[in-house]
Length: 178
Image (cartoon, rainbow, N blue to C red; front, side):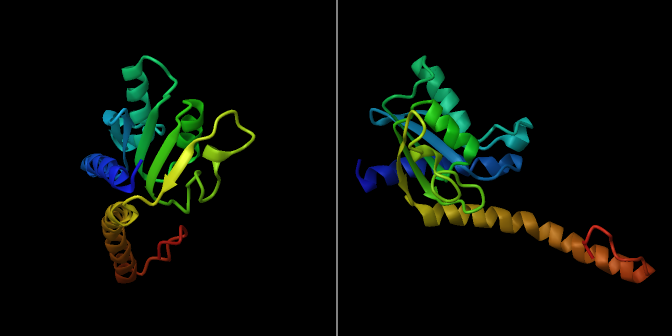
């Protein structure tokens, strides 16, 4: 598949990712494409659903399996805005997904090249063809903006806590917030 085609589908995943912050979830989106059309999509819903497995990739793969009537996602490509974690990478292998295209690498939790490479692990019974870096800057910028905004209130409240302790001469917070 061409880089242009990958970009078109990654734009769809990015559109899906932009829905996640509405319910305070990390903006990660995914689409599953088969025979030139989107058959499933999803975005992170861990906060909204109070479900640790509600990652964009998992939602899209569940929807694709339901659409196909099979857990085997043969002939499908998953497009996701962030490198999959160990759970999602394992699910890609278990679903026999032939191809993965992701945008931004995840140096803290990525399991498709950054920390581990489950998708191409030779000891497993299936390997996934991986294309990385498609629209990485755009997808990375969305994540950076989200986390910067999320940290801003906590920095402000940490400063207020220091000022309050100083005003009443409280001892430093043992949790290290001081």
